Length: 371
Image: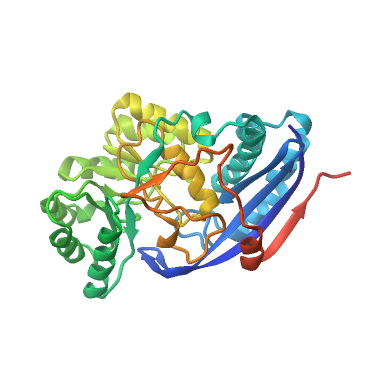
């Protein structure tokens, strides 16, 4: 397969409600969408980076630069030897930039699998036709607003609630939400690196609320600190930002730094690396689930396909489209009894609405091979 041209669309989609984490608040999702034209068809991908380098070092402007100047030229140079399985090796000369690399891998895979008539879920080894999904609830200083959001999501049928937390906005919201959802309903929290090991005694107060997990309480590289927390808390520790590769997972497993892993393809550099991490966790008996980055329908399709693999036993963050957007770039993903259907069409199995894409695109780079 040969890459003939690549379009990089900068898309700005308003969120239906503000989304606040310990990193800050978003009202708009600004995302880079990749359209890869090959000699066998067109494929789509989405870069998980955000406009600011808060969740990770990657951000939209940096991702655009490395895609235009470094990564895409490497794919053009592959000539007719391009395939989804080859993308990671082709891009290896560029260090880091995992989210940008994942966007290209997905776009190439989409084109390749469409031409072969194979769905992404089938290609990855999925075993489910629908996946359980939860919803991530942002931080708010208004307890009544938080309760109304949670009640709304319960009414819609979500199978798990995740609360974003930070120091000063943790015990109270968790207690109120546990009372609202009732004993036994799956409830978890996500700290996005907002705490330190010295907060262990405070975090241990969360144990009484029977949480599924506490996600990424400490900074990314503090595997030793997470291992200490895992010994001191009854609530399982889940790692997210810490796991950027299979090697990082091996470090976490060796130190007993976590009991659960959140797998995000963008964070680990591709769907195929995500599958390797899934396979290792499955062999080790570590439950996994699929996190989200406020994806459009393009990114959501790949996450749902990944979530159909056997090791994804906990509800993920790939909520319905209307959780985030009034209008999505694809036909919306709709919640059905707390689940999302896994696309069965070839490739990603979704069609990009060209009119919607044009309406929300604020800039486009059109890239072609050097003559």
